[in-house]
Length: 269
Ligand code: BT5
Image 1 (tube, protein in one colour):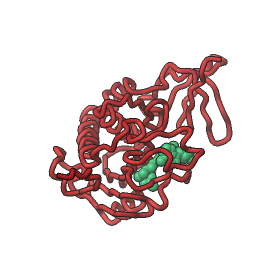
Image 2: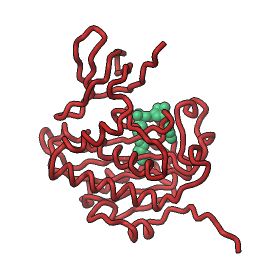
Image 3: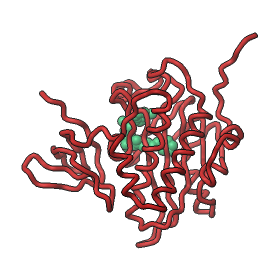
């Protein structure tokens, strides 16, 4: 008998296996779409319920932060979740932490040593395997909805990515030398997401941050942070409970909170 590797995304299989109350209970699946975040935002504006999941086999205009391009070839996991937490808008970035914990936990279940890099990356072997894009719509102090977009390089080899990205990226298939069952992976990810999200809503950010710190690869490291208009060096000493900002101790001894930027670890010369 010929055994076939079934690598297809199936909303029905995912829903059957989920143990969640509301995350992923409704799934909108696309073979191809522009950006799952854009679809999720449109559905949220029209009143879609918390937990709705948008999932695509491939994206033609996948986005990163600051309008950067997110490569989304077939075989990946490109998804967005709609959330409607009662939070102040400035707290929305905390949901990125929940996404990163869920992804890192699902990857660790495959036996890989996944680590989180502030603010929105999950790395394996020091290479980016996942990026998270959290977007929201709000008024001054009212959050209407949040969309957490998660991109995971799953069942394609990293040579499917442009050469300049291959240098810093990896995929589950490149690491494991085989494909993963994406439906099971997504189920695990969504179960973990809801677990952390409920902890966050019931107990606040502190237990989330503790879990996140266990998985972080930059705390206590000497780092360089690239911001919009400047670059700063320092030691990543903590994350701010109130905002999720990275706290740096600068080389001149002063402290600075970083709200957005790209971090790289400075290696010993
Ligand atoms: C991110 O941005 O890492 C957020 C990526 C979020 C993607 C998901 S997929 C589902 C949902 N729908 C969307 O349209 N987006 C979300 P940032 O930190 O700005 O990193 C972007 C940078 O990562 C790019 O400038 C490249 O250098 C690199 N990059 C692009 N595609 C990559 C990939 N597939 N794997 C690893 N690195 C990549």
